[in-house]
Length: 97
Image 1 (tube, rainbow, N blue to C red):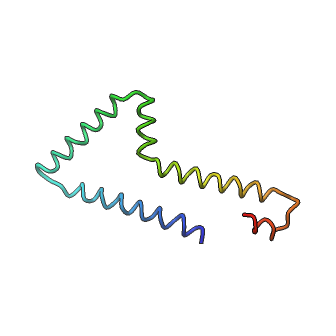
Image 2 (cartoon, rainbow, N blue to C red):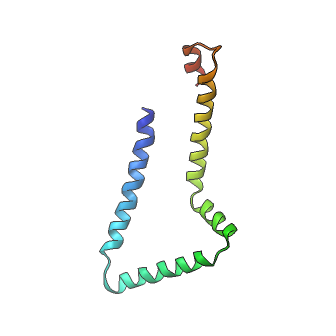
Image 3 (cartoon, one colour):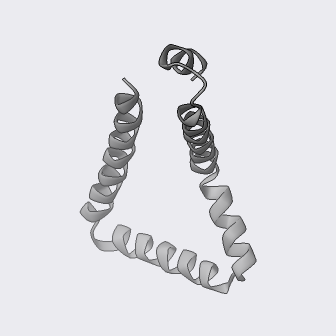
């Protein structure tokens, strides 16, 4: 069950990304030129930012990934601490985990 809770959202997110990439690849003519122009402008804005601004921008764009990653890391750390406790039996460890 925990594997499904991790793998299923990852597959869904990757499928969405691939779908968007496919949609972008289908554009031709003036639409493609406009998309290329917007991408070049976005890259120019990104290159004009300082390192601190780039980090802040990245953090804002990936805030949910940061929150989810922090949560997963804290759960893994708690599980590791509980697993190393030699004074608890396995049922006690499962109950508190």
